[in-house]
Amino acid sequence: MQREKKAVALNSIFAAVAITAMKVVVGTTTGSLGILSEAAHSGLDLVAAVVTYLSVRVSDKPADAEHQYGHGKVESFSAFLETGLLLLTCVWIVYEAIKRLFFHSVEIEPTLWAFVVMGISIMIDYWRSRRLRRIAHKYDSQALQADALHFSTDIWSSAVVILGLGLVLIGRAFSQPWLFRADPIAALFVACIVVYVSSQLARQTIDTLLDAAPTGIRNRIIEEVYRVDGVLEVGRVRIRRSGSRYFADVSIAMSRNVTFQKSEQVSNEVAARIRKLLPDADVVVNAVARAGRQESLFDRIRAVATRNNLNVHDISVQDLEGHLHVEQHVELDERLSLKEAHDRVTRLENEMKHDLREISSILTHIESEPATIETGDGLRVPSFEKRLQAVTESFPEVVDMHDLVFKRVAGRLYLSLHITMQDDLPLSRVHDIQTAVEGRFRQEVPELFRVLIHPEPQTDNRR
Image 1 (tube, rainbow, N blue to C red):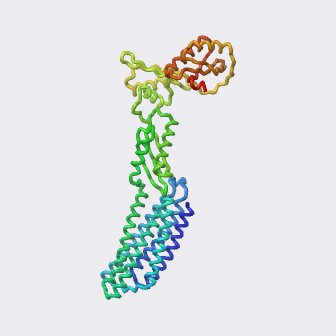
Image 2: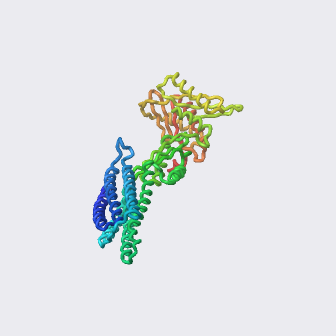
């Protein structure tokens, strides 16, 4: 990319040198203000081309510690300088044209070389404006786009100068002195063209330098982000451009019960949607937690626990004579003392009562959350397996029991197993059956410290 941009900018410099030299020579020999104004215009185009070449070399440098958004704005600054140079050209052209029209007439001697040079100038400007526009469009380069715009308008201004010289010749041939004024009038037309082009370019470059967002893009981004599943609100949307690259900063709200992993997935999807509108954009998505529109009381209880970095489970809510009573289990680091654990749970309960005013009372069962990896040994206890098999056969919903694993860990007996149940059982019933089976297992084998049952649907067991 940088090689192509530098090559086309360098070719533009060589072309500007040739055109400027030819126009200066011919404009001086003929005395044509139109050609001299074009020579001044081309001279400033040469300066602009040099500035563009230098800016292209700098703008493609990668971001560093001092320029964290890269060096792309150098191109916008280059285009801004070109605008100033063009306006200075216009001031000189208008001044000289008015002086020749009203105060000091100048004898013009149109020659064949004047027409030849202006014709060559049009062909060269057409060639380089096409090349510049193609590369500018390919790499979205504002500096090259400014150069392409300059040289495409040079075609029209050169054509106006040729028309002015032609009218001077006609005036001489038919003795019409008033046509001698066609040359300074042509120069004024050139100035008008340059002012128009400069105003368009100035607006574009100033918008970029002031970080103005492209028209309508903010609303399109908001509409696209709202289509992402899991986004509740779209807050801040900021877009800035540096060179050919856009930077987007977006704030979205998600349900406060969403997991960290899910939040990352939604944020990645939001960034992908934005890049469809702004290809290759650098997108930063800031996710904030909000209460969901349809949160249940259970969701709100979990949200308060999550806010305190705690995990609650087995939540039960009872309506006792119009008063809501909550029972819950919470896991805390097993290395905490009872006093430390109780203080944390007390703070949690107080916060829940403050946020959920409809709750009358809360009772929390404190469980230890393992913080160490324990070592143990696997066991085979055939006598236990037969007794437990008999227990599961007494439950009609249980189809079979398999993959029993006994372990001795820290002197305690652990059991894990799989049981198959009917596919259409509701989850609440599955949980009740598991609880009942665990209780019967402990009655049958009192040595059991912990039982973990993994339920499976009957169709999965057939595979």
